[in-house]
Image 1 (cartoon, rainbow, N blue to C red):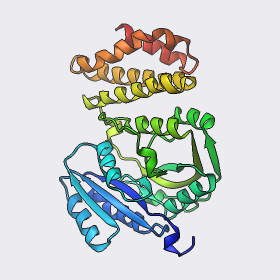
Image 2: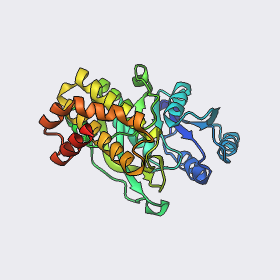
Image 3: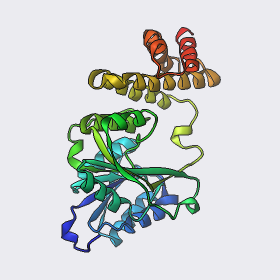
Image 4: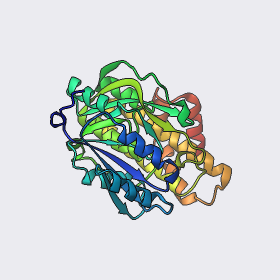
Length: 311
């Protein structure tokens, strides 16, 4: 990449931070090592109670590219929205503070947007269990994903996260961030893909998601866990209205979520979250004909859907 900084538009990387003091030094290092020349780093401290707030303030005094905002705890989705609204870049990316990125992460994503003329680009996100597992070879194939190739992959659990991508900031002008905090990225990305209809992609692993035992996505049943249903149902309704050819795929994700949550609830305490489980059972009952007819749902899942809809 040329060293002429003025050639490159400002890119903002938004990082929600919550009780992540263990990982912040690594996060800051990944940001500072980016090859792309014109960056700002928007750290949104989401009401941390450990040393995260102080660490964010300290890095901002040492490196003027870091902008720090302290807000009341409201979850990662609202923290990202808050950071997005304050980002000054023409383009924006998102990074979770306990993850890692390659030094060419932003550089390659920007080049993809320039090459393919899209408003969104993405790289492969690779799960790791510790930092030593980060690959040293990051070459990969690059190509354009049109809508008809993008959406089937999306509904098979690819590209759900806001992280691992670069966006032209204006693409978010009509996008709604949900209040429900589980699978919130799925809801946001569904809107973006319906709007943009294409994405530039490289299968080079430039973003590394670190697996943690006890993370929110692996917790036991709780009142908050049922929020996932609200987001996946909203995406199904969105597809029915705007892209009906993908409604069955979206329905499959709703059914899978219902079965998962109802099974977890039954194992742990069937009465404790009864009021939250009831809408899931009602959905299964009211959509049972569609569920049985669709080829996008495996028969074992159909049987479980019928069982939980009757109980």
